[in-house]
Length: 171
Image (cartoon, rainbow, N blue to C red; front, side, top):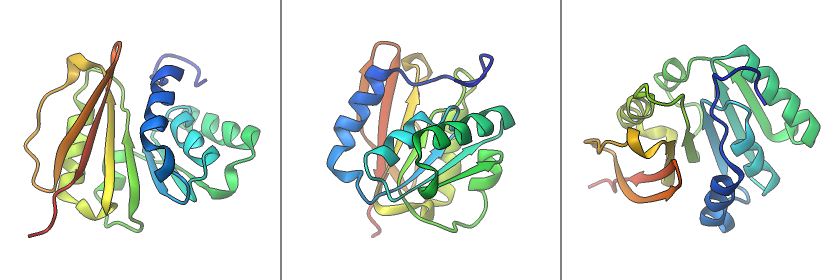
């Protein structure tokens, strides 16, 4: 765990549900874990066969925790951990396209919507058939107007919602 209360760890129930949804698509995938916190979602993806996971968090404490968790699990080989502001980093030109982009920022600050809008301006972070997955408290949800992504599913697990977005096909 990351010391303090700056991170919002995903519950085992929600993580299990998420990976049941993604199950057969995880082996070989490229996964981007934004606001990575402890790294548990990306580490779970690696443990299920993801070929690469990039973790991004602006907290040095979180980055150290992710690195320790990767070392403990022996999964550091296919991981990259970046100490960076996710918004600044995503605003750059993509150096890699991902199958999944996971967004789980601190709660009640509107960061999930801001990140989704930032990604909407730079859709080439996501492969054509990829998904963006947002983890928020259901009270935070607001439908967003997006040009390059559309919401296609939403699942609620107690006080956690997972919202799924896919790329809008090019016309």
